[in-house]
Amino acid sequence: MGSTSPFKEKPHSFRRKLLPWTLYACVPILLIRLYFYPLPLSLFPADQINSSTNSVVLNPSSSSASASSPTLKVEEKTHVEVACDYTNGEWVHDKKGPLYNGTNCGTVKVGRNCMSHGRPDVGYLNWRWRPKQCRLPRFEPNTFLQLMRNKNLAFVGDSLARNQLESLLCMLATASTPNLFYANGEENKFRKWHFPSHNINVSIYWSPFLVKGTERSDDKGYNTLYLDSVDERWASEMDHMDMVVLYAGHWYLLPAVYHYENSVLGCHYCPGLNHTEIGFFDVFGKAIKTTLKAITERRGPSGNQIGVIVTTFSPAHFEGEWDKFGACPKTKPYEEGEKQLEGMNADMRNTQVQEVDAAKEDAKRFANLRLEALDVTKLALMRPDGHPGPYMHPFPFANGVSERMQNDCVHWCLPGPIDTWNEILLDIMKRWEGQSRRER
Ligand SMILES: *[C@@H]1O[C@H](CO)[C@@H](O)[C@H](O)[C@H]1NC(C)=O
Ligand SMILES: *[C@@H]1O[C@H](CO)[C@@H](O)[C@H](O)[C@H]1NC(C)=O
Ligand SMILES: *[C@@H]1O[C@H](CO)[C@@H](O)[C@H](O)[C@H]1NC(C)=O
Ligand SMILES: *[C@@H]1O[C@H](CO)[C@@H](O)[C@H](O)[C@H]1NC(C)=O
Image 1 (cartoon, rainbow, N blue to C red):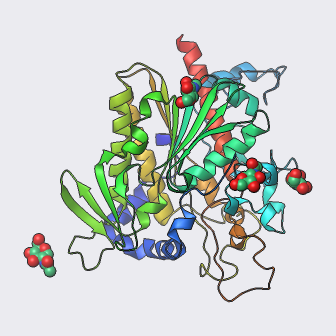
Image 2: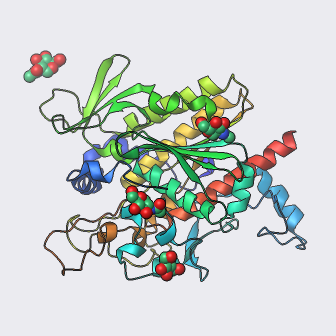
Image 3: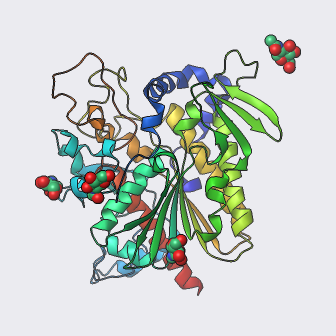
């Protein structure tokens, strides 16, 4: 992953220089803005809830790689050095279906539970991502739990971070039951669970920018960001984290005023404020840089291991108007070649990957820091069928099709494609564990 990515950055950065961001980014931004604006409070925050590679085969008997395979040793060797490129692959039919039943996983946010909201088609559940270069094993909850034993895992970011966390909790809950032991903040934006079986803590921190900022409100229609200060709501607890998964992106598309080094750097979509429009790509890069730098500077010298994962931008799939039936009506993944990663999706993803690569380079002076981009943008792009759409609300068509109808084409159904993010996460963790073993 990372610098070995198949998505060449050149065309986009070239285009970025030639064209103002508006020309090619405005359509998705408008759609996402329309989607987020009408009820920003109910969509973003948490609400009431209770409750690699094939490289290193930790447990050969239960693993994908057959122990008797004569090529196993060779495969291990090559994969250990070179991480698999997960971005290059395709969605293939998988009869096995999902690992869990969203209806009885108590941690799923109501709006993501497509099955229990009456989504009639179930085809979207039966796909698995097949990378070209390697095999991505089905999620193994017990392996994950073993690797995290006595550790503290934190998810930090916006509602997509929460979406990924909930997918993980549902998959882990098939092997071990988590106890919610902390819930705080407006609409439970900050929560922690404990897995007594393995003494693991898993937490979620609401921080849609990762850096310091205030979210737009009724009297102030724009976000305010401080690009050179990390958000202490999560960063103040960084010392206790053994692994942190970061996700930010969609909130950067919204109107905002950006502060940097004690002055206003500019803004994005702030008519009437007399600030320079600077778009959000560079701003987003600065914010990721600040975030990763804070982790490196605070955790590097401590000597304690920390793994940092940056989940890359998750594309939305609005095809028509957000409030009309059929905003994301597809029921099948795109076929290979049917959809290219380009425009804003590619630029957001490339920004993240570049910043992770730079931070990796910087972190080389510390042996205890590992960083990786969880590069899901391409595989997510190929799944227009995986969103709740109108099923963000229960049984939306109980009274027929209404004139206006909200659609969620941003978040992912649970179970759904986002489960694959965590399969890759586990693969990265296995690779890290293998590296640690060799270093010991
Ligand atoms: C999921 O669980 C619910 C409640 O336990 C059950 O009614 C339903 O049939 C299950 N669905 C599947 C697909 O197993
Ligand atoms: C969740 O909490 C509600 C009340 O707040 C309760 O009725 C429901 O049974 C709880 N569900 C689970 C899975 O604990
Ligand atoms: C989990 O959190 C509890 C409460 O904050 C703490 O006592 C415990 O040490 C934590 N365990 C791990 C493995 O971080
Ligand atoms: C906008 O900013 C410029 C430069 O800071 C200043 O000269 C100008 O008077 C400002 N205009 C308004 C309407 O505030």
